[in-house]
Amino acid sequence: MYLFGASGHGKVIADIATANDIKIKAFIDQDITKKECYGLPVLNTLPADQEKLIISIGNNAIRKKIAQEVKNEIGILIHPKSINSDSVTIEEGTVVMGGVVINAETTIGKHCIINTNASVDHDCLIEDFVHISPNAALAGGVEVGEGTQIGIGASVIQGIKIGKWCVVGAGAVIINDIPDYSVVVGNPGKIIKKNII
Figure 1 (cartoon, rainbow, N blue to C red):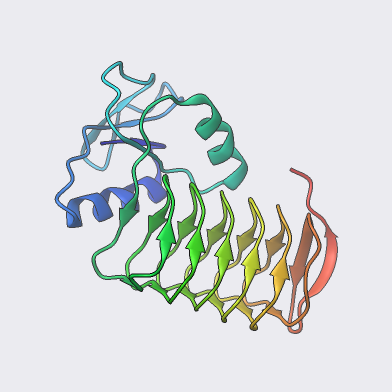
Figure 2 (cartoon, rainbow, N blue to C red):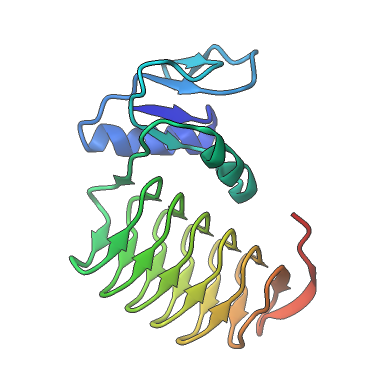
């Protein structure tokens, strides 16, 4: 497997691969000054061998742009020390970090990041390119639109709908639906501006 993105986020994903006995051949990064990351070589172009690939970049918009360009088969990586209901659906390109809990009948889209110790309860719908940050908690029936970032330690009550390409600030408490492209902070969460992507 290859990891596209030689950075700290990529190191965490490399550890998940190792925990699953999956060999990482190399990182790929467009920064030509990078030659090595986490003891692995860094290539500056996609190799021709079409090995499975994970995009290991935390920025949702950049992850989407790269996903539209690469032709490799896309993998999924799930940390063995996460807890995921058998009824959960997880699509290609998504990574699930250690300590995560994903409960019954939840759907996770493509190229998502469910980060360390995040909790996603039953019947949630997480669309493509979403990042649920460490220690964020989503109650049952929450919907999160494409490209949205839920900040570290944020809490979302049951049944909330969060639009696409939103940013929910660290520690925010979300008790009302959030429209597309909103930046929300505080307790209770308040929209402070529109997100420009």
